Length: 336
Figure 1 (tube, rainbow, N blue to C red):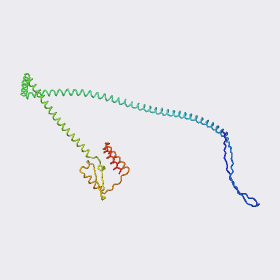
Figure 2: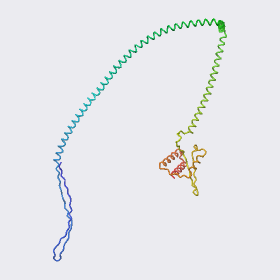
Figure 3: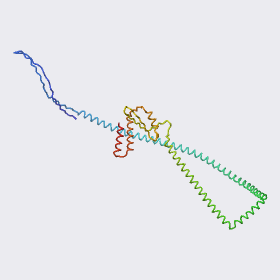
Figure 4: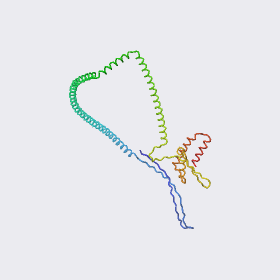
């Protein structure tokens, strides 16, 4: 689309020079200078119609090309999808056909093998049944023969024993007669009742003795378990598991005071559970005498302050004036 633009500006022109004039009464020259201003107007007209026409023609050609490319892309995608589906169907059908053929072949071979083995098993089963029948008949004949022999031997042995020990058998027979006569009297019920009561009393006494022994055994077992538990608890508190090269840290508090004459006194304190008699603290204080301890790093200082604050919160829970003064003094010493 054609358009016009107007531009206007003012131009300043500086000038200077000198003019000589001829001698009359007095000859000489005169200098002059100044600035002249001139306004310039410029009108610019830009004709874009040929360019717009070429752009429109190019746009129509590009639109046609885009449409043809889209159609070609759609046709190519459809062709690729169709070919891919055809190839995949062919591959899948061929794979399943191959698997089906392989399975059919294996099935036929297995059926032949199974039928042959079943036929062999049937023949072996018939042979085993025949052998079992023959063995049962032989066992029946043999057992019947040996049973008759053992019965004859038992009868012969019983007859010979009775003949050899005839007096003993006569005494046994008379004793049986006397026992039968005693069992049919009225004293039998009394003896049976007394025996039953005595047996009940003996069983109750035995049960009480067993219960007493069991109670004593349970008491001793309870005492043993309690002693074992106390021992294990003591061992757990007294023994620390480790490889022998582990390092363990103990809280140590060192006080250093300076009196008149620049005399310094250093005191070491340990928890009472680790140093009941104070000997460890004394040895540690003697060892650390004369040592100059470096200032803690920023990380160590942060950890120390966090630990002290947690201890203050845990041990100083009251909000009275005394607790507040103690808390402030601890923080003051910590920041010293």
